[in-house]
Length: 301
Image 1 (cartoon, rainbow, N blue to C red):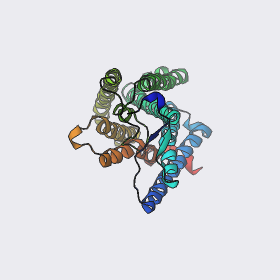
Image 2 (image 1 turned 120 degrees about the vertical axis):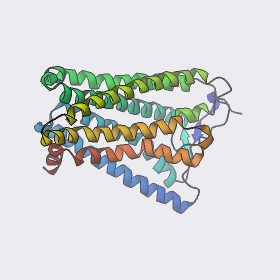
Image 3 (image 1 turned 90 degrees about the vertical axis):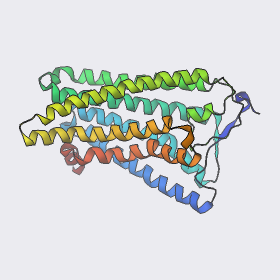
Image 4 (image 1 turned 180 degrees about the horizontal axis):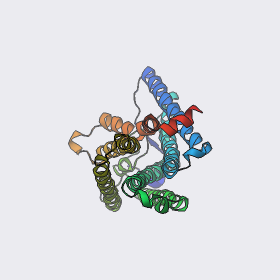
């Protein structure tokens, strides 16, 4: 039995014990990581350099790309290094930093996606008030609120999680440090405080999800009533990429944290965690650029 005060490192779950498969995992993650860097980097550069993209929608997209770059850089490089050097270890401080950064960036991304739903709602359902409600100052304040909320959420959970005594060893069934995996290592009943915070966080996430759903119900109600086919096409081209990103983010994250224990296994947890932590940052740039003519034109330039 070990105590958290004496832990110097944690052992992460390897993708394989076979050297060839470890190198295959390294190669696959390297390809995904480079694709995420390229895609999100191009969007950030295009939005920053092209004045035609200095709009609220693209400003929020720039913030989303920054968050995606940060979140995938928090987990994937360490996993690649472990596979390349055939090790499982991550230091105690490194694990705490990974938990904080991942929670910070993922929480801020979810809040930002909620704000982006509000932006779409105002643009389509309240077009005459758009310039007044979504001016540059309001956009900066909303983006700052998303980043600040993510920071406070991550700080609260990280401080609370790593103040809990750990006496169930130091081996995790995950390829990166994650709060539920750390709670499995805690002493009996000492994790209940953090579980309470997780429930509060889930209620907040549910509130954001309900807001997004209600916004899109009203958006599609207005869009389907548009007499112009060109207007409907333009509205759908604005909304569908965001809806696809939200669906991918929410469905994989919800399944990862709320799946029944009866179907849980290390292999399934590993696959699901890749789906919600690695895949979205890599595919988000592709989703957003497919139907956005202005962004595709800026990328060509």
